[in-house]
Image 1 (spheres, helix red, strand yellow):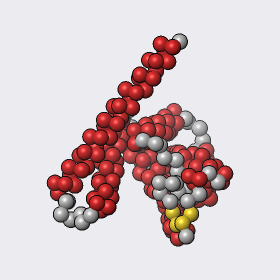
Image 2 (cartoon, rainbow, N blue to C red):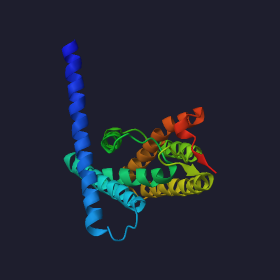
Image 3 (cartoon, rainbow, N blue to C red):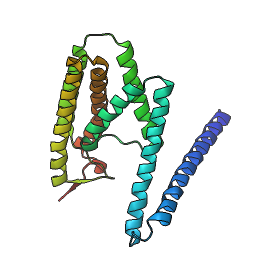
Length: 223
């Protein structure tokens, strides 16, 4: 029993070391790019830190995209995966939602949700009104819950109002586009968009629940 516990702890430490090593390499790359090409334009340490952080997010996003392309080719679902991710991102960028603690966790969570949606679309042959109901109900819940900020990205009241309006606009636009795809016979695209909206709604529920409970991490209102 103790040996099993030690093995698990050792494996956990090894994974943590690998993850930290990958993050260190990405941070070093971001710093090198900043020093080599943008050092003169950045006047102080605050601007340099902001630039490196933005570049770090850009590199991580690029790695995510490469990973999703690889997954799409492996499972032969690149087109469906692209529709899902674009829809998910359009609704999420103003609505907010659950964030994984690491970018690897974010990638894995998004990949699982995306592949599950592709699987449902592929193997579920039920009536189309189920997808209509999913899209409409999920859109209504997203609009009701949005926007959700976090301690890492607090929103002022003015920013919340702006995000609310954008969430309503993009969510309704996405739903209208999905209905248009259905009308013109692109039922797979319609299904993927409905599932993506449903997945985004699911990522918001735990944060909305904590927000309503008044937990510190989710009551960031700035005057």
